[in-house]
Amino acid sequence: HIILSGVSVYVQANKRTTEHMSAEEVLANDPSSFSSLVLRGNIRQGILSSGNNLDESFLGLKAQLQACQNEQNGNNNKKWMAVVLSKTPETVCILLPPLAMRTPYILIDSHPRHQQLHLNGSYIKFHDSMDGLVHYLQRIF
Image (cartoon, rainbow, N blue to C red):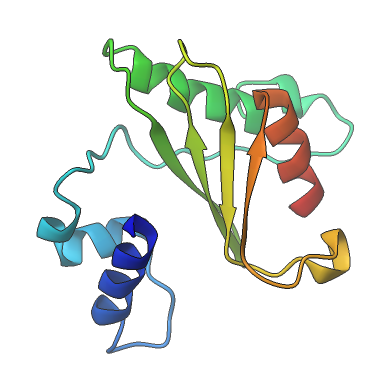
């Protein structure tokens, strides 16, 4: 129900353009529809790499996701953290559990991944660990 409600708000907000809207634009357009969401921090930028050890640096994907999770839990918050991850032209949503919970890590992807993963439509994938999630994201990005 929550996802369908969010899609409905996005469709209403995006009627005047064919361009995709960022998460910030959707939230700013109709903040009352997302009253239970809190924007934590700012946009983060990192580097995706293959084989040159940037994955372990502070700019790597895993480090960026861990920083988001730590930021949320640094406030003694036991709530989940949603992260919108974009690498043009792809965008996915990641749900990070509270640190005390540790699992599952959830990926929501609206893009079909037939060539890469033999998936024909949108899907949700559960991961047992941050490492599993990062490895999977590296496959699709």
